[in-house]
Image (cartoon, rainbow, N blue to C red):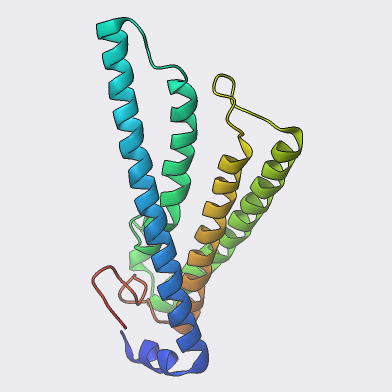
Length: 191
C-alpha cells in the first residue's frame, strides 16, 4: 500500500472502509462459490439430459426451465466477485498514457456513473421481483416461482454496487492508484 493508503487506513473512515472491504469481499466470494455450484449443476443436468435423450429417448422434464434459472444464479452471483478482484475487462489502450491524477479523475467519474446505473438496475430489479411475487409469475413447465430469481438479480446488483462504492472511496483516498486492487485480496489474512 502506498503512503497515502497507509495514512488513510489509520483514520477512522479508513478503518471502516477496510472492514467494509473485508465483509463485501467475503460476501462476493461466497456468492461466487454459489455461482460455481450452479455452473456445475447446470453442466451435470445438461449431460444427464443429453444421455437420457440419446440412450432412452426420454429427456429430463423441465431441463430448459432449470437451466434458465441456473444461468441467472451463475451470472448475478459472480459479477460482484469479478469486480472485487478486478478481473473484469478494462480497455486502457490510451489511459495508461495520462498522468496518474487525471486517470484517478476518470476512474472516479466512471465509478460514479457505474454506481448510478447499478443502483437503478438493482432498484428496478427489486420492483420487478415484487411485481412478479404479487402476480405469482411461474416458469412454464415446472411452475417454479420466478420472483426469487429476480431477487437474486437485484441482490447481485446491490453487492456489485457496494463493491464499486468501496472502490470509489479508495480511489478518492488514492489507495488503489498503483496496485489496481482492493486492500483485501484472496491470499491476504488481516485477522
